[in-house]
Length: 89
Image (cartoon, rainbow, N blue to C red):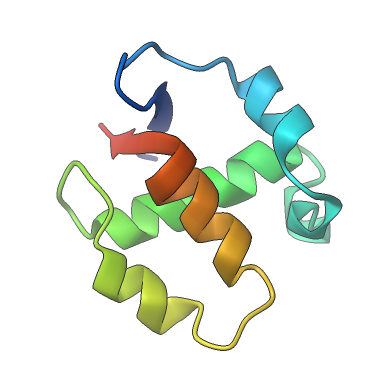
């Protein structure tokens, strides 16, 4: 499976998954990811990988389409696009 990484905007320092996990709201904790060490981080990363659509960075139009009228939308945009830079490898 492909992996994704979060980098600090402007400095491009790699962010530890533990830090992202602590920052994410509880709404990202879903049952299907409970087996992972950082379930909220893994869920957001999976969403990011899907929204990369084969490229290395987020396709904002795809993200808007997937999360249209969803309660995760604002926080997802904040973490994947605004606060951090997300890349898939």
